[in-house]
Length: 575
Image 1 (tube, one colour):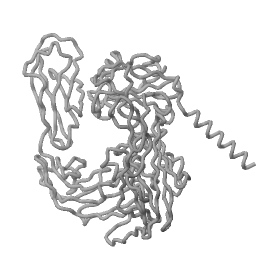
Image 2 (image 1 turned 90 degrees about the vertical axis):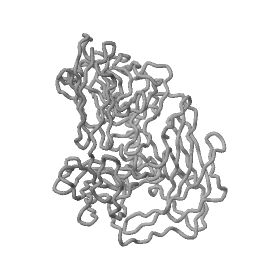
Image 3 (image 1 turned 30 degrees about the vertical axis):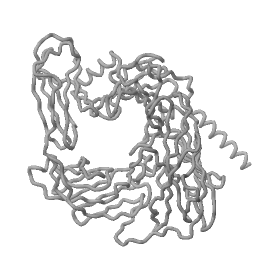
Image 4 (image 1 turned 120 degrees about the vertical axis):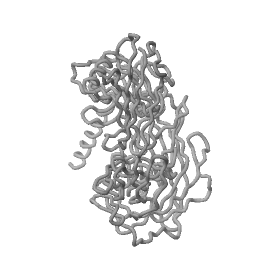
């Protein structure tokens, strides 16, 4: 009876899994073009998030017509300086939601509605939601035009399909909705080995040992060394992999990585889909210290305590490889892309006589993922780490460092403090407070800054109050109190009094030395008008909404940075 119930349960699970897959015949291609080339794929490992969709090339230009991939309605429109910029969301009759990001503009009637909403709200950024009967669409209807808005490094369409009830994202190439030309197997670039020991319930790792890889033939790789890789009694491997596609020079993420030892599978990572609350867990799927320094995907062939099971269909002993001294074994690693192309690497390993042993450090403090912990450096600096922030237990050695050098306009007001290493990712933000002596005239401009690997300072944020700066942040590494004293810069991209009657836009170049542009207000003849910001280009753009009358107009632009410094421009143009 128990066997029958188990079989019935497995059948139900498999049926449910099949029901959740997309039917490619339900959808048409989201953009009217012939090349159908992509620049990024679903699930790529990026610092802080998995890539949530596919990026479709638009031949380096804007203005390609975007179409509804299936029948449904416009359920959401958003306009923002960052993220997806101009984005449109279609709720489809088949139970999914299609997302189009980085648009140049919406369809004319939708664009006019958005313009009126922005004027009524006096807001450059808007997020609008609609009921089914407001903007219905049929499959193939034009809904907007491709662009380069938001956090976009070049013209393209970011496209997603989500399950509407759960908002779970689908792997569009793997499920056949987007079908790029691809017969190129993934590339296995190098392999690393890490030994593990445990002190007081905290894993301690050896320095990674790295091994070069060469390609023997298409899809087949080997190590450059012929002798076995020596391993300890407990450790795991990390595979650096990447992928290519026909017709483009871009690199892509892999769909699946598997590992077996002596023919027995013990590890599998697979990117079939995820919900947004799991997106940041890419920092646990990857070996984060290697990932942030590599152009490849550094996939850890092991599972951290806080890495979700959903990404690992096969997992034995959390991916740990146990090898006794003198024991010889055969390890095989396979990488597969979302088009089904595969590559493999096979090499022998041998247990070494001496294994890695962690040395206790009396200055170290143990942190555990489930605890609410406060760690301090003297009386002047502390960090509060909430439960769920860490992916695994770890030791930290908080310390006070030298005062770093500030760049022009940035006044450094404290030493640097290091609570966590910069290679420690946080899933949830921490609360950081650092006390410092701040002159009264600088207090409204005072925030926390981080120090990069090259020594430069970058804006983290926070506010000054009662002798200390407090910030909620996921930034780890060196933190320091600074004041930003320079206002943003504004440069009109037209000459004073220029005739713009044949121009559709009013454009400015804006920049900032440190904390970045956060707000901007444009008035024409004293009236507030919407203005789009393109942070990757450093421009602010107003699109005229009325016909030219050949009159002289006054433009007034005010821009503020993240520390409250303001710049103002006043000038005239003819239109």
